[in-house]
Length: 583
Image (spheres, helix red, strand yellow):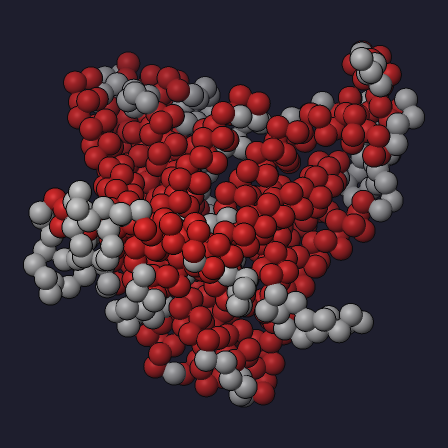
């Protein structure tokens, strides 16, 4: 057996820690190439696309060729529909997410981990799959409703092809975001304050109203803002539900503009993307104003003992939460399965009509879906593994450098993740539409532009678990290795990487999980031969092949659940806070 490196045999007592490093100074043992490497990567992935977007927007305004798009009736209608659906979806997200957050964080219901895990699934499932599942679950031609004998009469309208239907599904899709934002704050409710109020004779309702609710305001406002911003940039749900009904929002308007390419298209989509970014920024500014001037600091103990006992109402609350999960998760998935097993949309599922033909087509005959599987697996695995090459040095640098540099890097990394995916895709089109300097090769229309866009969009996702591991690692271990003469790469191999390996594994699975089902970015960047799973599902549904779209969606949902289950099995080896449903 190979003996451990001698720096790992140092005891902590025998190692002298370095003196605190001034903000911005270069700590001892940091390689010279680290800062230039990280800055170059973040400039290419985060700063350059945004600069191209802003530059194209100003150029369109200055030339006057693209400014007409801002005064067109279609643009006004898209802005109105975007605001209505994003606001309506935000309200529904707040109602559903807050209900689950209060129940899981403050009451004594059973199965909290299972409820949190199941409630997170809609957020992990691609939005176009969510929309397709609900379409298959409702309306007069639903195979599931026909099988149960409760389908509306033929000729009845599809209720989801409306502004309300888009808002409803945006609310279902983004309710987990409100749940996550609110649950963290509720878990810190003041235990001693709650106990003092109870001893004073206050009713549970009065305790909730006077103590818990005011302290939950920051999480509730933050969750509402995130749900609004996510609704503004969502493409999959408005595309599946809005395009058949002639309802256009800004993301689908950009998609149609790019499809009908013209001389001023780049300037027009840059301006439309700026409108989306402005609306998203407006939501975040309103969040900041709502929280400004208020102090939400907690003095005293906090924790799980602040939970309310439901008594005989516990079973009733548990059944209510289970009913919501059945409606937003089980029933739509059952409708997807039913639709994938019938020969045509509208045929009831019986022993005579059941067929696996759609799965055979998807897995063995359809060239497009096989190509989509291969592209998505390549893009997701490449992004998940490749991002570690950037995330690990970045996390190391941000952990060792406190102050302005770390703060600036953090902002640069968060901006592409916070921007709506449609805006990020437009930024990359504008950046890489022209041939690359010196190489004279254009990335536009190739799979590589999608991969680079994934690198930019998911860098924040990859960084979080690795950063958490670095923050929880004792710096004396690396310091002992450095004092023993180990170079940077030797320290990374023998000290740092073994300690952050579980978090790196979680990072790989999380990025793979999100990237494999992505649609919004790839919807604008794909071309013939580079379509992804998300694009394939959208195209199949758009062409009327609902059984094939449903079968492919079922396979995607199974993959999502399997990856989430794999993450759950690693939970005991991961830093705290990495898995959102355990946060």
